[in-house]
Image (cartoon, rainbow, N blue to C red; front, top):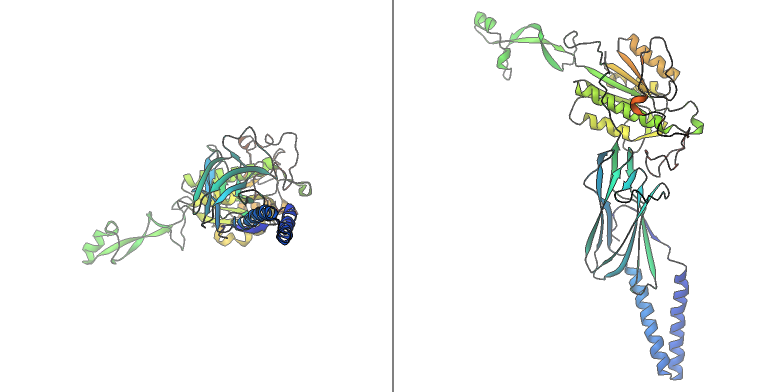
Amino acid sequence: MLLPGRWVGQTPDDPGKVLRDLFVVLLLIVIIVGAANGNALVVALSGLAFVVAVTARIWSALSLEDISYSVSSTITHAFIGDEIELVIGVENRKPLPIPWLRIHEFIPQGLEIVGREDDFIDYMGGTPLDEAVSLGRYERLRRRHKVRAVNRGHYHFGPGELTSGDLFGLYVKKASVIRHDWNLIVYPDTVPLPGLELATARPIGDAKTRQPVWRDPTRPAGVREYRPGDPVKTIDWKTTARRNELFVRVYDPSVSQYAVVLVEGTTTDRPWEGFRLDVLEALASCAGSVAQHSLERGFRTGLIVNSTLSIGGRNVVRPASGPTQLADILESLAMMRPATMGGLQRLAMANARDAIPSGATVFYVAGQLKESAVAYVLELARRRHPVTTLWVGREDPPAIAGLNIVDYRSAFGVGSRMAGNEFARPGSSRNATADAGEMAPLG
């Protein structure tokens, strides 16, 4: 079969198949007995039934052979509220027509089918989508459906199931795919943070660096002989005239402005009871908003998050300011799951050389404060890193000497998304933010 995706293969046929096969054998016996007794009518009727049954059996066996089936879209990344057009494609690549084909697809929770918002069915954490089609020889069909992104997350589609059989419906064949090649990443919400200050320990031009980012014209360092490729505007005409040879001005390299967002993925001090969904969403949204805020102001911005991420996610995004930097950061935040891979301080220390440049502004986003992480953040402050803690926990922010904590609960709706529910559990129907069907247990 030509079936894109991770296929389980053909599922066992229905139990009635055994009885129908016995019936075919019985017809063959009746034909033989009728022929031996010279009963032409019995032979003719039994022979006709036998031919129909055998034809149906063969037709059913071939019905799902050389069938191409896929679920795809031109969009792989979206924001909450965006509508995505899904294309369900099925193609019959053989000369045998398919009189009927039932398609059963699975839309993961966190996405809703446009036009079916009121009749949502929570089935294994998602919504079933069914199609019934028929295919002629070498025919290709496309069915289009729109889904709306409701929650952030990394969504894989499946399981999908194809069911077909013979023209008479005597035999049924099924095949299943556990996951399609296409997947969708929905970014977390971001909000403006007009009151957030971006303090820096190193304004442009106040320090030198061995790795130049750009030459600061306010810091002349001398002159040197002209080399091919030097900008004309750097030529020092006085020195050139005095020495009768081209010389150019050189400058000390200026440092860049850096910002690093540290995200503590822990949502509660009682992880054995589950996790706090509103806090988890606030962590992702707050971190994304801070990253967007700092990038818009010219800071080279990075991310360090100790949450477990779905496959392909990066826990460390090194500071940069390129056109894709915000998308890279938001993608990692979209993949956050309600469990951590260890202490934030260990992850940050292991990557500090590349991910936390000297003097970088540090934003510590947390809904729970871990003693080890707080100690590390305070140490960064002692090393002249401007540090701001953004609090999105349910409780009032604690008072810790030396730690500047800003309460951002109201900006990200903490406590309002799970009214009456203290904890959510991995795999529960409310958890629509992580990989569908791949939720890791909390440790």
